[in-house]
Image (cartoon, rainbow, N blue to C red; front, side, top):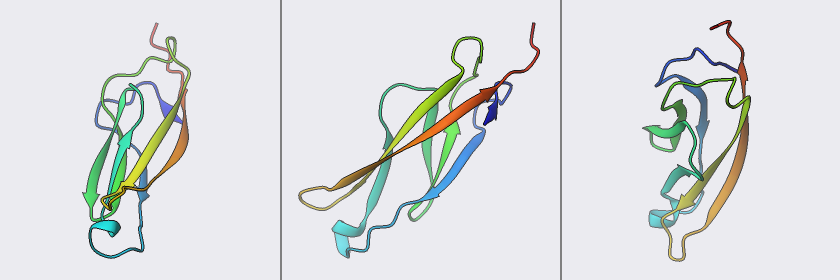
Length: 94
């Protein structure tokens, strides 16, 4: 859960991506699918943060299904998805 009053750049979740292959096959990138008020930020090798990218309004959207796609740099590239549920908590803003 996340307060609708959370300002942009608020960290929502931290996660790691690990690929046991070596070389390019072991390097990973992460991205979000679809348009949402979040972004993925690289913190360190294979460590990422899900961060708010704009102001949130619970009266417009109560929850988000945020799908993170992790992909390696192999040829062919392999990928996996994980969906995170982000529920917004109401703030008396009226």
